[in-house]
Length: 119
Image 1 (spheres, rainbow, N blue to C red):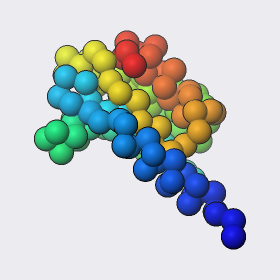
Image 2 (tube, one colour):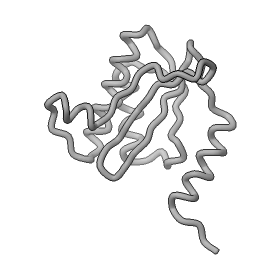
Image 3 (cartoon, rainbow, N blue to C red):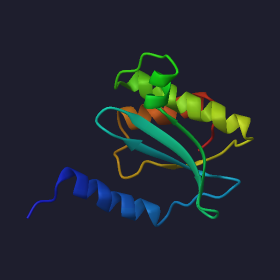
Image 4 (tube, rainbow, N blue to C red):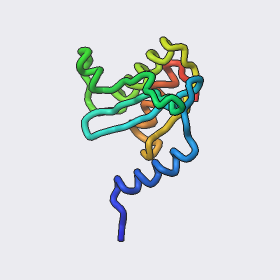
């Protein structure tokens, strides 16, 4: 019996979440991608709160033209870094949410690094 692509991702997600946890000093940068958009959140797991979020959907609403590309993912990474800097957050723990570190996920991480986040 073969697992589906999403079942494999969820299995990787469980394995990653055993090791990765965010705090107020070093929140968890979570990435989620759908077929149309890419999302990023900063999460404090101790308090169970989302500190900040950015997405390609929010970029479209603000007037930017956003297609589902690496460039858009990079813009989302830079946006989440800008929001984090506004909240005096310098370092984060990167949670790729079971996705392979390749393509749009890597582009978002690189965009966040360009924006000044350390992980």
